[in-house]
Length: 305
Ligand code: SF4
Image 1 (cartoon, protein in one colour):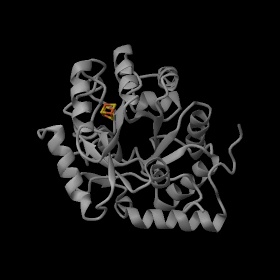
Image 2: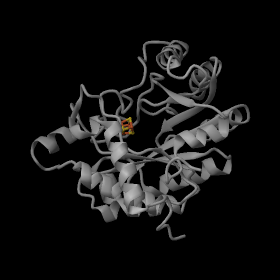
Image 3: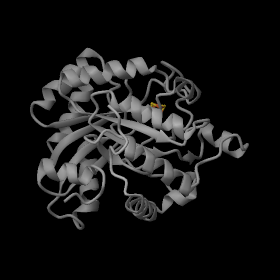
């Protein structure tokens, strides 16, 4: 019997690898077209100094060293685990393909690495990159994590995502055509969004060939443009109860075969300004599970194909 009334990442990994599987967050030393001036220099309004990869290892270390460090941190807890090398910081397909190949292959060559998860933008998947991903997918498990954040084009402009829903959709279909599973990143609590807007984003994902989703709480981090909006009172973060209520609705609406890779967000306590309740991740998840049980909610209960 499933542990939770939704398809959790833990269970999904267990079904694939037959054991505990953990992710090691890496910084491949890439940048982002939304930060380096190609599209803009400001980046997304919430993007941190570390390119939204605040828990990734130090980019000055080699990929091998980063993997070793990440593994050492978890090995005591899960001595028999295998690992997914998660290229998290900035845009991890934004480099010449020979550079990407070298970084990905270095990660894959490390002991106990069972696959790669690559976070990127939907507008950074050229044909050469897709060819490389397809080639690697014949040797190992690969996931591509695409930042959607919202399906509301007005919000996407406001947060300076830098591409349309159409580009996102095209990339999902290109990855689907080469059988690479896609994990969509969604942010709950973006500026000016109502719960109805967030549910529309879930509906948008439901109609695409997407295999996973990360539902993340909007965090206000220092040195971001969102910080100014927050300090001026223009942006008000979600309260814990509001977030939990929206999460319950999103889980109920989500297509039942989509794996939920994340249900909160990991704010770095050194740079997180708000909401501070999110630092108590265990408490948030416990409250969510309690609420799901009380309301008898299961993933897909209100999914309408
Ligand atoms: S796409 Fe990612 S790395 Fe680039 S600006 Fe946005 S959040 Fe930052």
